Image 1 (cartoon, helix red, strand yellow):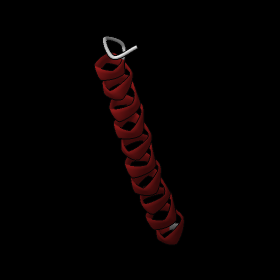
Image 2 (tube, rainbow, N blue to C red):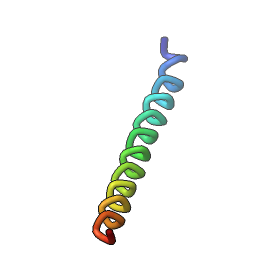
Image 3 (cartoon, rainbow, N blue to C red):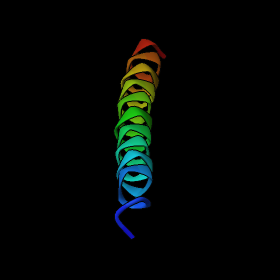
Image 4 (cartoon, helix red, strand yellow):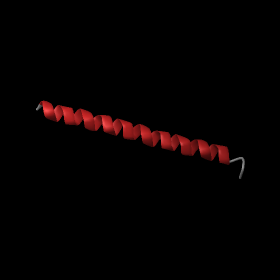
Length: 40
Protein backbone atom coordinates (compact mmCIF):
# COMPACT_ATOMS: atom_id res chain seq x y z
CA UNK A 1 0.00 0.00 0.00
CA UNK A 2 2.75 2.42 0.95
CA UNK A 3 4.34 1.98 -2.49
CA UNK A 4 1.15 3.11 -4.18
CA UNK A 5 0.57 6.15 -2.00
CA UNK A 6 3.06 8.49 -3.75
CA UNK A 7 1.56 7.65 -7.15
CA UNK A 8 -1.95 8.22 -5.83
CA UNK A 9 -0.88 11.54 -4.32
CA UNK A 10 0.62 12.61 -7.66
CA UNK A 11 -2.57 11.66 -9.49
CA UNK A 12 -4.70 13.55 -6.99
CA UNK A 13 -2.49 16.65 -7.22
CA UNK A 14 -2.53 16.47 -11.01
CA UNK A 15 -6.31 16.17 -11.01
CA UNK A 16 -6.70 19.19 -8.73
CA UNK A 17 -4.31 21.19 -10.93
CA UNK A 18 -6.34 20.21 -13.99
CA UNK A 19 -9.55 21.33 -12.32
CA UNK A 20 -8.17 24.70 -11.27
CA UNK A 21 -6.70 25.16 -14.77
CA UNK A 22 -10.09 24.45 -16.35
CA UNK A 23 -11.76 26.86 -13.92
CA UNK A 24 -9.24 29.54 -14.88
CA UNK A 25 -9.92 29.05 -18.59
CA UNK A 26 -13.67 29.04 -17.96
CA UNK A 27 -13.51 32.35 -16.07
CA UNK A 28 -11.43 33.94 -18.82
CA UNK A 29 -13.86 32.69 -21.47
CA UNK A 30 -16.78 34.15 -19.54
CA UNK A 31 -14.94 37.47 -19.32
CA UNK A 32 -14.23 37.50 -23.06
CA UNK A 33 -17.85 36.61 -23.82
CA UNK A 34 -19.12 39.35 -21.52
CA UNK A 35 -16.85 41.92 -23.16
CA UNK A 36 -17.83 40.87 -26.68
CA UNK A 37 -21.52 41.12 -25.77
CA UNK A 38 -20.92 44.64 -24.44
CA UNK A 39 -19.29 45.57 -27.75
CA UNK A 40 -22.51 44.60 -29.56
